[in-house]
Length: 225
Image 1: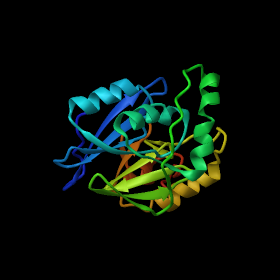
Image 2: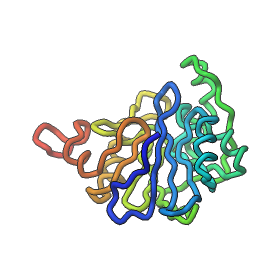
Image 3: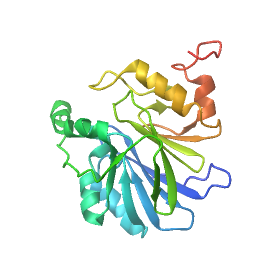
Image 4: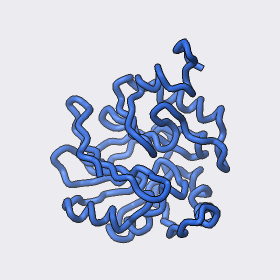
């Protein structure tokens, strides 16, 4: 598990992360500075490990919010939802993606996840008031039809849309390359350069760094593709 994040000047939020499961997915713990209330973002696997972290730190989970419904992002949702009695948020267009995850698990040779109940369906530009924080929902389809990114306090949780020097894969069911690139250009790269990007896999980055250096978004001369 990472140390609490402190890279956003004047930030009123704290982000911890833990990488879980065979797909090395990043699960994020988001909370207000000086507060035990917690939003869990993309709990992908290893539910017992996530529960131990939460309980040892005395955090009080308020909700689970997912950027999308792929197998590697939803594996621990149902156990956390049941243990803490908290709601689960997912975009409506990704409910079929989530329901496909049992077949996906058989394909990849990993255990089937328990199927969570979607309590609230996310919409573009929705403002979520959770755990004393306001999250803005950006619909960023392309990796999946219902993929979203979550903006709060100088940060964006991009799921599998945007990575350090890369973008999400589009060869899975529901993926579409042109749609993903449009989502990134129109809804992520319009954020301030200093915005911290918390990615679904791999290291954090910034919008400014990806705008100027991501080889999927700019050519060798630094011009937008």
